[in-house]
Amino acid sequence: MSFVRLCGLLTCAILGLAACAFRLAGNDPLPGILARPYLSVKNPYTDFAREFEHQLKSSGAVVEEIRAKSTATIEVTRDLVEQRTLSVSARNIPTEYELTYTVTFAVQGPDTELLKPQTISLSKDYSFVENELLAKEHESDILRRQMARDLVAIAMKRLTSLK
Image (cartoon, rainbow, N blue to C red; front, side):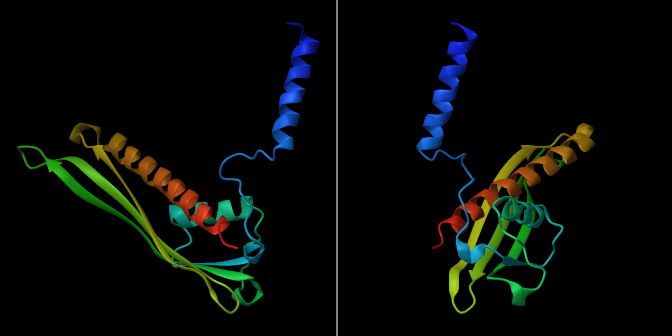
């Protein structure tokens, strides 16, 4: 197949996707009421809070610093990571843990509640080897960050469904 013909086919494919309004998953536009949201979080440095603010900005929202200037308030009332021991060895040393990341958020418009409190939670388990302590702590951090990204994706999907 010649290079010119290949370029022509690729151009047609791209134009065809653009014509049918193809968008990447997760890139749904936010409703107008969330154009300038105020993000109320207890701790702005958690994995969820940082990723949530980043995704809001990536979706075109201008996150306001002052609540009075905002079009809506997104209030995160719970942002909690819990670790639980799932199993222990014969020497009573943990061999498996479960991480659970739970978030609760709601959206308040200027005069009405736009989204009632939503609680979403994800859990992942991982094995623990005493001799690999640093590696397992790193694995725990990676799992926590990934769960935060997944929770943000779920929250953003719920926000884009607002009218």
